[in-house]
Image (tube, helix red, strand yellow):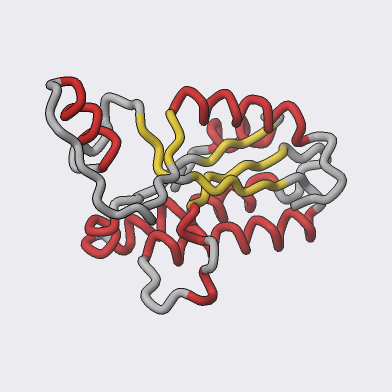
Length: 171
């Protein structure tokens, strides 16, 4: 998304909506590649807003954020990913209201069901163990898992997109 050429910018200006799913979400990677995290999570949102801000007919703009942004203000140790996602939400809200377009931030929880799932995460690990009839012990009764299957996420996003235009507020 960064450094779009003239033709790409023309396409963005004519679109009905923008879905921004770019992210660098693995915590260790965000610390190693701070600029790349900033560019994918925030700078690209700013560049897209800059392209559409003066359109007569502005596209709606949906960004993928993170459940990690919830309770952001109370967190002591914020990760670069949460910082850039929160900044992207705030940026989208500010400019959606100022330039009068529909903007929405969707906070994803952990997603599973892709071939690219990190096999060290709990759902892929559980699936693998259960597949081979291995014993699974969860010894913390207070453990709360908040996962969504990639297909359910896509279906929910499609339903949300159908309703974006009828939102009363810009953000």
